[in-house]
Structures are given as structure tokens and as C-alpha cells.
Length: 222
Image: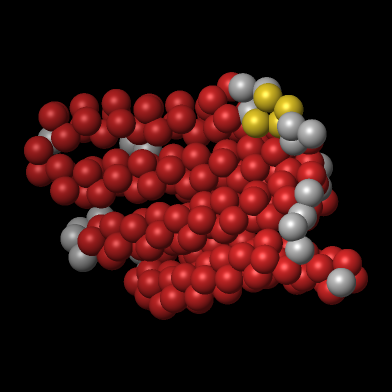
């Protein structure tokens, strides 16, 4: 029974990492759509949403099956609980990538406007956070997860700076309001992806160390 249970845990980890790969791909495609103004990348993001949603359902079902199969204790229980939460965050990452793709489609439909915001740089930072959060999960390394937490403030500042300059741009040049608003919303979507990466990192720390570090806490469990 223990062997079957361990195999189930291994399968669960593999499925979650595969879903993480789909979420990363969605971010990369949405970013490339923005960089190139090529709608084919937007369509790829939209078409890939169902695969992420299907993966979420599979992982939820397997997690619940494992909880029912054997009453896990300590680290195994924390692992399954962390997977359930990370699973939800990855699905929301996919949703945010879809939102970005839809905004890019709207941008593409209008003449190109130069705006004083470096969205690709922000997207690169966000993508790195997701990659490292998943790396922390793959290797079970809380220290890598902690590094992700430190990056969240950088992305927050980027979003705040984007808000300031874009609002000023819209005030000074009302004609660019629509594209500027789309870019503002894209920066907000990216900031939310960073929040989900932070959640994943916190869940890895909870799994590995039994520590609840949400909201700046550090409460340990046996």
C-alpha cells in the first residue's frame, strides 16, 4: 500500500510540473504576442487554456484519491495540500495569460502607439518568478522559494511605475487612452501572475518546512 501511495505522490508531482510547463508556455506566448504584435501567439494562448483547465481537474481528482487511499501524515499531507493550492494558482496564471492575450489583440487592432512602459522586461521578471517557484517545487528547496518571495516587491514597483506614467500619458494625450489602458491592464495581469508565483513559493515552504509564511508569518507545524 505504501508503495502504491508513493507512486501516486510521484505521479501527482509529475502532473503538476507538466501543468506548470503549460502555464509558463502561456506566459511566454502572451509576452511574445506583445513584443511582435502577432495575433497567432494570442490565439495559441487562447487555444491552450483548455489544456490547463483539464490538468487542474486531473490533479484535483488524483489529490483527493490519494487523501482517501491513505491518511497521510506530516510531510506527505503537507505535500498534497500544497499541490492542491499550487494547482489552483497555476490555473489562475493561465487565466491571466489569457487576459493578456485578449488585451494584446485589442492593441493589435489599433495603430501602434509608443508608450513609456517596458512590458517585456516586467514579463521577464514575472516569468523568472514562476520558473523559480516551480524549480523550488521540483527540488523541494525552500531557499529557492524564499528567493521568489524577495522578487515580488520588484514586480510591484514595476506595476506602480507603469500606473503612474500611463495615467500621466492618458491625461496629457487623450488620444492614446485606449492603448494606454490596455497596457496598464497588462501590467496589472503580470503583477497578479507574480502574486500567484509568490503563493506557490509560500506553499513550497509550507510543504518542506511546515512553516506558514503567508502575510509575513513563520508558524511551524509538526
